[in-house]
Amino acid sequence: MGFRLKRLKRTYDRKPIAAHLYVTDRCNLDCFYCTEFDNSVPHPSLENLRQWIRKIHELGCIRLGIQGGEPLLHPDIVEIVRYSKSLGLRTSLSTNGFKLTSELVAGFESAGLDSLQISVDRMTPIPSTRKSLKTIIPKLELLNGSKLRYNITGVLFNETIQEAQDVLDYGLSNGIPTHVRVVHAGPTGAFAVDTGEKEALEAVIDFQAQAKQQGAKVHSSHNLLAYEKALLNGEAVDWTCLAGYKYFFVTAKGKFWLCSMQRQPNIDIMEVTPELLQSYFYEKDCQDGCGVYCVVSESLFNHHPGQFLLREVRANLKTQMARLSAQRTLTG
Image 1: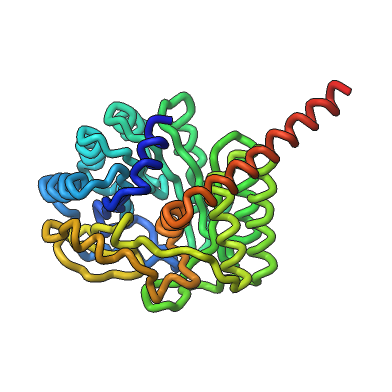
Image 2 (image 1 turned 180 degrees about the vertical axis):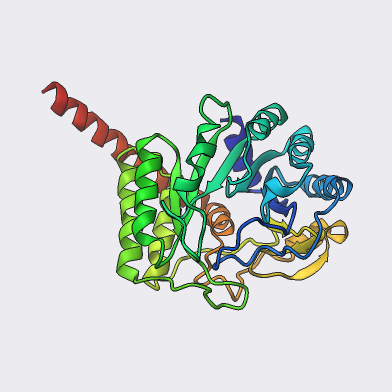
């Protein structure tokens, strides 16, 4: 609750709230839709990463998302988390889970990692994505009894639609916060995979919205689910992209990007000033149809915080009413 209040207060200032830091470009998988890995380059040093994290903190961020590539490939990943937490940053980490071990779980617990996001697209692997639940169930079992908060997330496109539903069913039935989101285009605006039929994609989004309203642990806000549906239907959404201002990305080479798709201005993070960040507070030409959901979510909240919260409160009230109705039926 304390962090949520802090985040709400920070909505009204001119400092950034969150950053994503790529701690490596290297990855052990090769998902067709991914544009964020390069196995030809070495990991950045722990010294450089600490320097960049300090800079992110000094600029005003209160949240840090540790990304890759595959972050677990970095030999100092636990120390990276520990250092981030020592600065007071709320720290999350995204992984495909393949390299997760009991030692890493214990290390992350000790370091104070706030949340672990595990990417799973299907029940079984296929050439376009090997991020399958069947493969990593033993890794999820390492988290049983752990203090770590974790969630399952997937990418929704033609080849994952049917089994993405199975992933949702598995996660939600086991009380694991889970969501799948519609694939987005790469930096060139082209899709690396067949996105699938709109009706099928929409059905999975509708399922998540309804399941969340019924109390299931769908790891997405009602606002973002509504945004995805509007995206599929080509509907306009009133928002201002805050990439580069309230939310920015730092590459494994220490370069500052607006986001993972807008890889500019590509300058050294150590040269970034508050004034530069504030200069990116404007509607972007690329924001229509944007699928960089972390940035979209933060932007939706900051653009109309009252409207954002009201949608969540209304939906949560419907959830509570549905639960009460079900209890009355059972005790009828």
